[in-house]
Amino acid sequence: MTEVIDATDVRWRAAHTDACDPHAAAASFARTHARARSAFAFAAVAGALIVMLCAVFAADAGATRTVARIDGAPLFVAPGLPMARPDGRSVRESGSAWVLRRRGGWLQIPTLLRRGSLRGWIRSADVRELHTTRLLVRVDLSERRVRVTAGARLLMSVPVGVGASGSPSPIGATSVSEFIPVTPRSIYSAQVYGPMIVALRLWQIKPSPAFPFGGLMAFHGGDERGIGAASSSGCFRMRNADVGRFAALVREGTPVIIRP
Image (cartoon, rainbow, N blue to C red; front, side):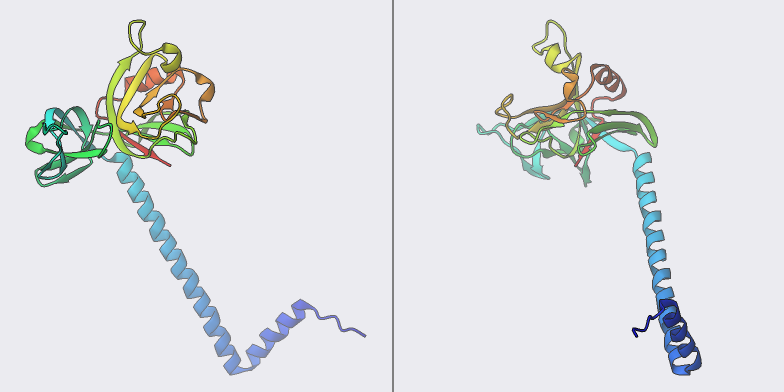
């Protein structure tokens, strides 16, 4: 006859044996204590990590960022190393830009350069004005969504069309460059760009059939069929009503973070 072993009976007998054998009981207690310590240590590390992440997100949400207003400031590849054109003339930058880094009397900003370095340095002495902002634009490419916040307050969250696989939207940190209204007199088509173009200090360097040499990254309206999809030549396509609202919320120099 085949003996049927009850798993409950096996566990009971093992526990009973440990209880009767002092050495086995001590080993069992040590194992249980070790497991408890490991579980406690894991919980402590997980708790500390959660607290740290909450602190980071809270600090980011409430952070202020510096914006520089510049007017023909010379650009440098690195502090003390000027950028120069092929003819030897210096490269200069104007407008408002998010200050990404500081190093002594130098400020790093996103540039409007079509090729080469996407970031450059300027002397703080060449800055016309510095001010802080709590506005922040976040673009999540995987979610295909743009959010505008002022500190911890969410001002806007809407879907956008992002770059197609052959012309993906670049990721990184940049800022709003300018606002270009689309009118019957402008060179831009309202059917393609909608009522407004909000340009960024960032170039799309991946070629596409529409822009074989790349183009300036921007938020704009236009054809709404690709909203929420990877459908553009790299820019962020919004509903026409959304791009008008977006343009009313942000300013020149408003920081923009584009993440995967």
